[in-house]
Amino acid sequence: MTSFFIHEEMVVSLVDLIHYRFFPGLVEPLSDQKLNLIAEEMALILNWTPMKLKNEVEKIRRKAN
Image (cartoon, rainbow, N blue to C red; front, side, top):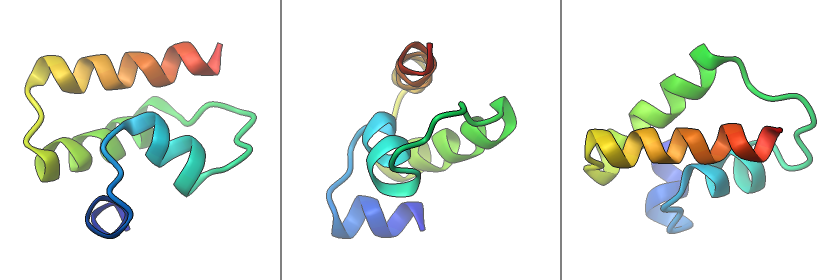
């Protein structure tokens, strides 16, 4: 599913994928395990560096607070 949104919808950020594509209107934050799985899959597809991956996950966590 992640691959579809990246290739067909041109999603390039974790915030876009989580909050606007997968779970619009999400009130409760995803578990760390689920968030990390999605982020790691996205990082592989988009060739993110470890720093980019970390920054994207931090953006999601800040948005949840």
